[in-house]
Structures are given as structure tokens and as C-alpha cells.
Length: 202
Image: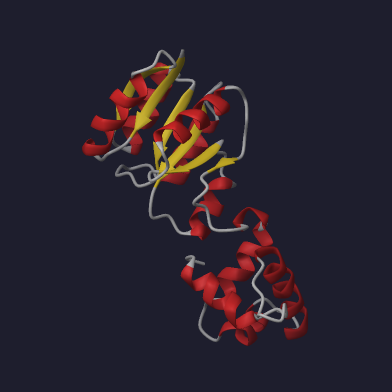
């Protein structure tokens, strides 16, 4: 059986989720934590195979610090389980050490499949609800998208980054290509890119 620690502060969700996961002889729910501090303490004590981790938690430890600490524990894998997370935040979590990211609107079957796959050593499993092509972006792309949503947008962003405007536009054109942000005639549209970045929390 897969030993699973559920970390969820919403009691309505945990009361439904835990019995649903326990129905079959696949998962053993070894504990429930409701804060980041409880999650770390229980994880150290129980050493679960997988931590099913809500990304909106109270506690003294930040969620990013918690993920770092949990990834250092032997054989413990993390499946992030959340909703209403902007694409920019998901991208950050993806690079922080989680094995999978699932949305709370995903079906229970999809969640179970993901947990089993992670237990088998699979990595980079993501909800179908993830913003299209977000996984194609690297850290440098992420930085540029954050810069172009600030006041002054592209021209000012070039100055802040100490880059020629033309060089920045070329890099942004590559990002447009990755995200498939084009006009109807397949030309790259930087205004659409800025709008996309703002809408997705960059």
C-alpha cells in the first residue's frame, strides 16, 4: 500500500477526500495535517511515501520552505493539490521539487492515477487544467514575463534589464512562439503576450 500523508486545511475537502482515497486497498492514509508546521512534523515522524499537499496553508513555515524541507526527507515525494493557482505560481512550484501538480477540480480517478505513478517514480505529472504550454517556459522566460507586466511594460523593462529593446523583443518573440501567442496571420503579438502574462499572474 502507498502510505499517504494528506495536508489540507479545508475540513470539507479532507472529510470527503480521505474516505474516497481509502476505499480501495491502494492507499493507507497515515495522517492529516492542517498547517505547514504540522505537515513537517508529521512527515518527519511518519515518513510517508507521498505527501498530498494543498498549496494554500496557514503556518509559520512558508509553503516554498516546506516543499524544500520535505524534498530533503528520504523517499518522500510531493504531489501538490490546489485550485485557483495562477500559471506563474504553478511554474514556480514545478521548479521547487514537487513530483506532480493536480487541480482540485480534477477527477478522483485522475488524482489516484497520479499518486500511483508518482509512487512508481514518475515525475512531471500535471493537471490537464494547466495553462497551455506553461511547461515550455524556463526561469529566464519567467523573469522576462514578470518584467514586462511592470509599469512601463516592454520599453521600460529593457532599461531595467539593461538590454537593448530589440534584444528584449527578440527574446519575447521566442516566448510568444513557445506559448503560441500569434495574430490570425501567424505574426507574433507582444501586446497579447503582455496581456497573457498579466492574466496569468506574472
